[in-house]
Every structure is written in structure tokens, then in C-alpha cells.
Image (cartoon, rainbow, N blue to C red; front, top):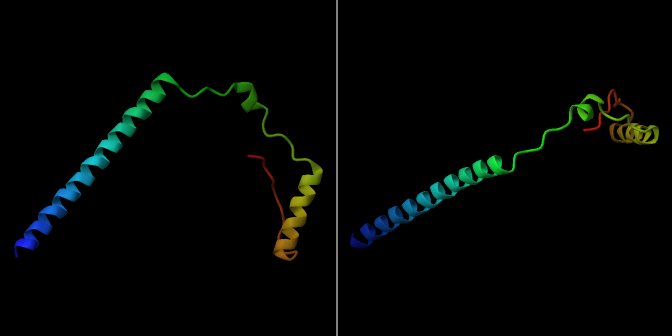
Length: 85
């Protein structure tokens, strides 16, 4: 019975240690994120670049996409819209 008590105590100590280490990692991560956001903020995208819209897809690439869809779907598929992300 004594071995069972020692095993249970060891399990509780181990789980408490893991839990406390994980809490430390979480809070240090939050502090790191706050510091990075404060001292190195993300650069804003200029309005002109966003207003131009996506560039058109070249014809040869569009033809290759259509051919690939036709081969994969055995002629049943159809490309309705292609956008560059």
C-alpha cells in the first residue's frame, strides 16, 4: 500500500510540475507577443497598391489551368473564375 501512495504522490507532483511549466510558457509567449507588437508593429499596406486590384492571369497559364481541370475531371469540370491570391 505504501508503494501506491508514493506512486500517487509522484504522479501529482509530476502533473503539477508540467502544468506550472505550461503556464509559464503561455504567459511568456503572451509577453513576447506584446513586446513584438509594441516595438515592431506591422507595416501598413499603401492604399494605391490595394486599389489596383489583382493582376490579370496570362493566357497560357489560364489555358494550362483549363487543360488540367479537363484532364482531372474527365471533361465534366469547368473553370468559372481564376483569381491570384
